[in-house]
Image 1 (cartoon, one colour):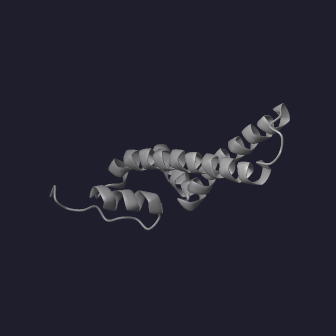
Image 2: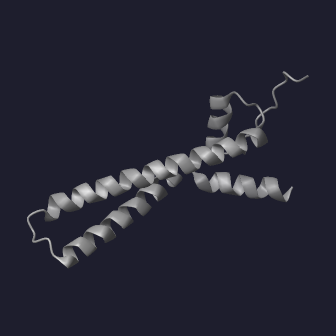
Image 3: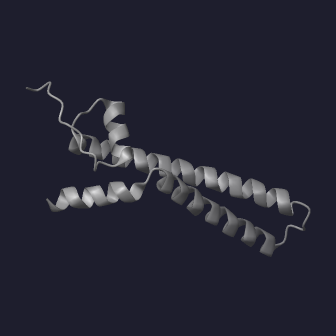
Length: 109
């Protein structure tokens, strides 16, 4: 009986199903913590990617301008916005909304 796999529900989020397959864990609740960590790790990676892309684009388009205080402030604003957009992009691609809704359902049961 220990080797029996629990059937997956179609309502399980895609990231959770991916984590179940990746870790060979048949139970969605057991893979939930790993899916959370994977989401955090990939979101951090998206944030870093967004920061680098924003910095490169900003420096590419404004490299010939004088490096004044306002130039540096705008660079920091663009880099911050790039990081936020990178994180949100990863969360949207991974459909984090489904994972959050699934966790809310599992904790309320």
